[in-house]
Length: 167
Image 1 (spheres, rainbow, N blue to C red):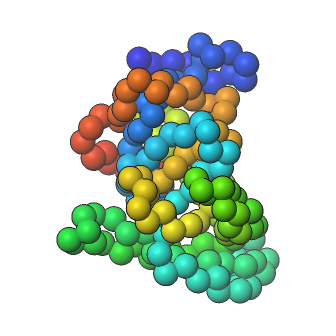
Image 2: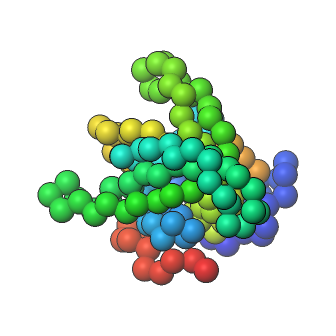
């Protein structure tokens, strides 16, 4: 079902997504399954080998910025594919996990595409080992941009893997 561009406050103008969808992070050349979680405030990405690198010269702005390097593990446990990413840190955030334990996480910013949803958002980096989804889209990423239908999954992205990266 196609809908018009989002208009804040008008629920008929935003796309309806399932509680789980395929998510693409085109700046990092990543495709993964994501859970759309309106109970979570921020978005989160499961990473390993997280290392804060300190200040570096930003190629785009010419300013010195703090950077982080991490691996996103894709594929099956029996045949993991490690995808290394190095990006600027936009800040740190204290987040309470599902067990209500506070954790300080680095925050990065990237483009997120999920069906008709195409936005740039902040994402916290954390170890989500044991969770079913490597990516969690929280309500700050979704608000005014999409509605979530909890009765179904893959409503707009289909059950199979997305075939092409968005440009």
